[in-house]
Length: 181
Image (cartoon, rainbow, N blue to C red):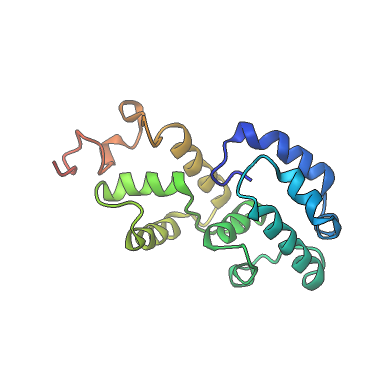
């Protein structure tokens, strides 16, 4: 629900969703229109359908639970590289890379500094960085902190560079000698 949607819009819907669908079984058995109506007005209306399809597959093939390995998660329609990493990191507390918008922006600014963030080749490089940076212990905390850092400090429009603890190492910081003018 939080992918590209603000927390304040998600929280009430999240609680409503969990109240109606506390398990994969409940979601799998619910009428599709009810699932779609519950999701409204979060947008991206394909998501509730995909979540229900994932729930149905989990119930049918995995005893009502999501598997905890990347390749199997990626086999579910609607679960991509980011979501698989997030599930492994946040639900199963595994060492797994994530690359949401905030994390991509932080890694790009700190380590690359210039160029096209959204380029396919750049995304591949950023995925590699993300995977290399995730510590063996406390990956959950690391990933959450990196996401929060991007959401609160290294923001898209008005980054707080002057108070940033990474400024001296940041390739995008204007006063860093590493920064190309």
